[in-house]
Length: 213
Image: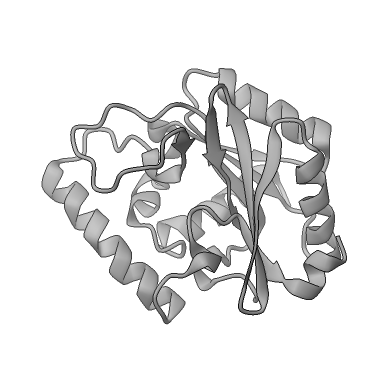
């Protein structure tokens, strides 16, 4: 499958509101406008690190998605989890058990900031809001803008996907998407959000899978 077809397929997941986030659905209609870059990668520390550093250095990239088309089976996912730990700019900060899963929180160091990494993929043990067609990690690469409206405070020194600059959006539309986000997410999940789908969790995987990494 050609790279652009893979990217368009993944964008449709966001555009259709599959991630729960209505801001992502809005931005996915024109990702370049919002500084959202999509890249295809092998499961390789060197290639992943190069994409991270490129995204950090490029002024017009504030959010980076890295799609791994080869990660299709659980063994592939285990390999990715290990490779991410070995990537220089990436660290595993959270490893917390929740019910029958381990909630893993990978972070990317960007200067003095830590960027929370969000993960997606075609695995039925992922929360519904993380079940995309292809395995993907997404992270913010620039400091948070000085927003006119702040709906929820972010922990000091942390940046994440919710920091995306929704350029030109009117206040009433912004607030409508913000409040709609919670209803949409709960409807997709079928329950209140929990640690498995939280922004600080990259991947929630079965205990047995993680023990084998």
